[in-house]
Length: 470
Image 1 (tube, rainbow, N blue to C red):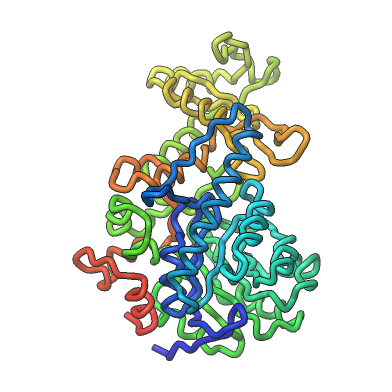
Image 2: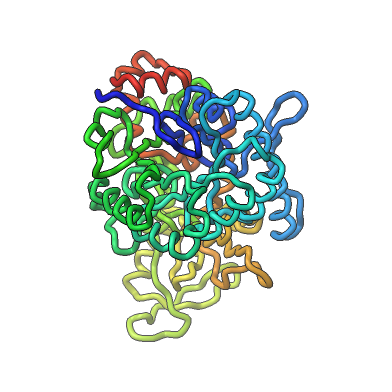
């Protein structure tokens, strides 16, 4: 394998190895601090991170407000306190080595407010901000206010071009790097555009080369591009390393740090990672953000897929082929289906899926009474964890704090399920019945000899393994 040399990122020399940020209590200050301590760029998540009581126990994020707006304020307070807790942990552990970045999602609820409050209270502790999930135009402005570097996450050269021309050219000196996140291979939310086919992955090299060409147009020859998604062994990327065509390249690891001793995920999640097979990570569009996302194909994903399959169109007045009456809800309000769809509905009802829920697309989905109660309760308990949420119709925009659309029961409460999977440490059922984000290469835990006999490395051991090869 080629020698891996340090590069300049965030104003200092670091190993070209970046820990990928994973939200809601997964990328913590402990993991980030150890990654930075090994000489790379450690990333903690500022997305509803954990804070702790005097005994060191994670404080449950419970909501008591009667309205969504009240609960939204509680969520912001939890987020700021948790992010500051993780930032200080990372800083203490790193002991001045490497770099410490905070990861935020631009589409998370109150993103600007949260990261601004965090940076105001963590001066000199956080070196940079990594941000994706949307088009974070104001990221450079926030970075400039606090004199920290910023790292936008994009999935195309076109996206960065738009960000630069609109805003980033005003804070060029603080652009620490650009993260290219492969929309077919990365875990979590993915940046697939409407013109890209989720079933037809594209080679990342031409896409990253196109990004480098755009960077060069703006005089950013030496700005590192951070390749994220699908990176496992660096020898598989040797043609990228020290390649003058691509310029300075670093590599981001999001999935591999999950299986370390410092990783906060529980034993049940780690066991599951070691048993995954190729194809077990599923690219889907069930997220309440509206983005595609990559997650383990478990019972939770299967239930969401089945909900959408038990779906028929309806009209409120008989027209065309929609001539079959059907009563919806406790009051059995009449809508019209096609006779063929009504026949399908009767079959679903016979199988126990007796509750019809309306979607924003003038369709009905059919679920069990128990699932219907769960969906409606989750929608009512919304705390505004996203800037807009299609599951609950929350929007952070005043005056209505609503998307103006009907809540979509084909989606789910992302805050609830991510908190559950993060904090049920040894519960295999929780792993199967909640959202487990993962990169598509997670199946390689089961085949990589490094993890033989259930070996779980420390962060430092993982970094050393990455640097020295297979």
